[in-house]
Length: 66
Image 1: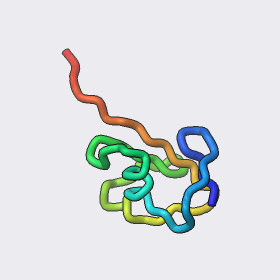
Image 2: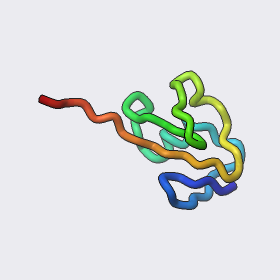
Image 3: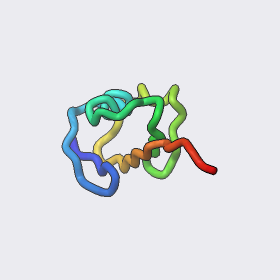
Image 4: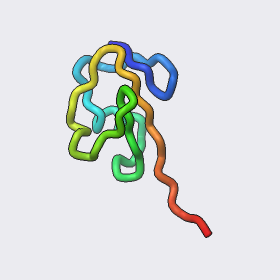
């Protein structure tokens, strides 16, 4: 199935959930924020399966500052 990942079309396996997608992309699930269809997900929602055409944004949480 196709999703839109960070504004680019990507083919993923049917029924993949957010957690598995994040791991397949070699991101640390603790260090990434995930938005699906404009809604920021809680970590507890990462087991929800994605649907055809979902718009997914992955953003790394960066620490630091002055």
